[in-house]
Length: 396
Image (cartoon, rainbow, N blue to C red; front, side, top):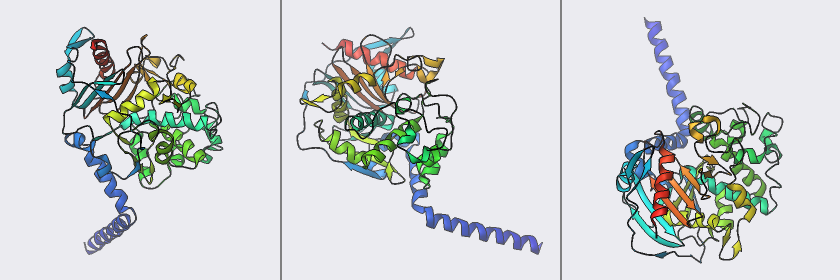
């Protein structure tokens, strides 16, 4: 009995030492993990998505001196509603049911509707979640136009040393842009392990290099956020600058942004897969850059061909409904979603209901942020497309 007691005390002592060592070595990271987990509880979502720079470590992206302002009119009446799969959804109820925190509607550079629902206002910075992927795509386009990256057909191993000699070495950059890299990773089951390992200090590219290949590039489109992490690392390695610094100079100070933005850091580096905090109107300014084929105030910030190629969802794996997969109900270009139809629409989408919708045929931009824990509900994304179309159709 005494031996068992001594053994138990010894185990407790060892655990105490290990715990103390972990807290000493990783205390700050463990605290960050705990804060993150708490922030994403359903009851905290609306606060989290409006206060990320106060909750998480971030890098500031300073605006320029020459803000470009939208004209603003009194709020229009939105379309009464829309039909989806034979059911009519009233607009106001849909806005409420999807836990909308803010919505902005712009047509021909005029704000037609702007409303904040959960305590925010025009100065609030809303979390992008995966809408940030579209910003990374823009930075890749700029890096290519400046010659840092030679071509989207280049293999990722050319720019990321961790991939040399691995199965991933010859994956083309374009395959990562189009979510068709073939990497053996499951977004639903593997992301928590990836996040934990990187938070504890293992470099993201070292973690990714171990996953291997599930199929050849361009075989299937499978939405993997680590593809965007790879793109972000290529930009960092080739430009020698962090994503926030590069974005500040090449994008943010050039598009007339009204507010500073912030990029969330993971283990000291920008989280490429979705870590921006941006005001509603500045999301619209970014969308306007693409609406105007990469031109802002007469300057070609993004190459016109890059904008065009970014919305190309013509390949079998890029088309709406590819693989008969629920993730692929909407087409996909270079980190932009492309709905089926003839209006040339494109969207940036983030988890929990973050949206940038652009309709070039109607010259309409809609930004909708949310704190919706039901964002994985069946038909959620396609339902939003019909909602946005009804709004665009209803503007005089």
